[in-house]
Image 1 (cartoon, one colour):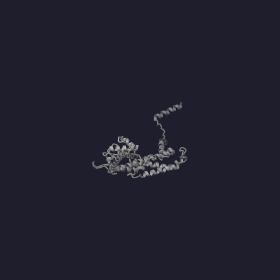
Image 2: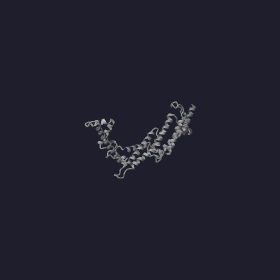
Image 3: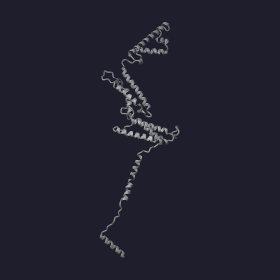
Image 4: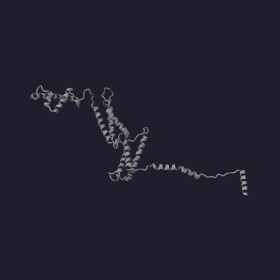
Amino acid sequence: MDPNRTIERRRSSLLLLRLLLVVLLWSGLALGTFSVGSSPHRVLHDLLSEEQLLEVEDLSLALLQGGRMGPLSLPPDLPDLDPECRELLLDFANSSAELTGCLVRGARPVRLCQTCYPLFQQVANKMDNISRAVGNSSESHSCARSLLMADRMQIVVILSEFFNSTWQKANCANCLTNKSEELSNSTVYFLNQFNHTLTCFENNLQGSTHSLQLRNYSEVCKNCREAYTTLSSLYGEMQKINERESKAEFGTHLCIDVEDAMNITRKLWSRTFNCSVLCRDTVPVIAVSVFILFLPVVFYLSSFLHSEQKKRKLILPKRLKSSTSFANIQENSN
């Protein structure tokens, strides 16, 4: 709205107010409603209702303040935003509100990255638009200075840092392509397999839907074993790829959507359905363990069977042989 037109309208309304008060006072005197020596406040009570009186008093205070109508206008010494800066601020506000709503709606179960990434990119673009509005000279009016550095709170900066921090903690970049324009192929495939596994769980549930303890989950464990195993293997492969690509970053996680989906599936499989899957690595581990345990037995047994047991033969000297034979002859003669 044009500020000159606003000032003219306010001046016109103030002039009409003055004329109205003069007419009311003059008509009261002409009709003899009150005497000339009556109190002005009593005069207004006679002519106006209580609600109208309060309104007149407020307008009178506005007249005493120099014609400024309270919150309808700002003091002339306060800085105002340019239309371009105000438009940038409103765009950022609307985008932030949409992103905030998306984050809250996708908090449980976690669907942050897969549903909110377009809105996050939109907020980031709005923030870039504000940041790029910095003037090259100190004389030029800068929207960035007005919106980002004009006060101690810096609300726009705080909101932008909150969104960036949330996005980094969720590690949503791991679910998206390099340019963060769409979900990666591995993420889409995993989410499809996740939905397929949940559908299998639902279709194979037996028993009353009102009593979880009385349900029979044998069909779930039997018919959904392959789907669950495929999902678990896919998650393991994604973890290996992520660790291989981010060796320099310790403790890097997959995006929160994938992790939460796998946690939900594992809780349903092991806790709710009480199912189990024989790990493929179990058989080789057992075989190697048994082989190691039997190695000492095999070693000692083979040593006993294949070693030659030789009797020790005592070879006596000739003198000892003759004396021994003579002693034997004497013993026989006796």
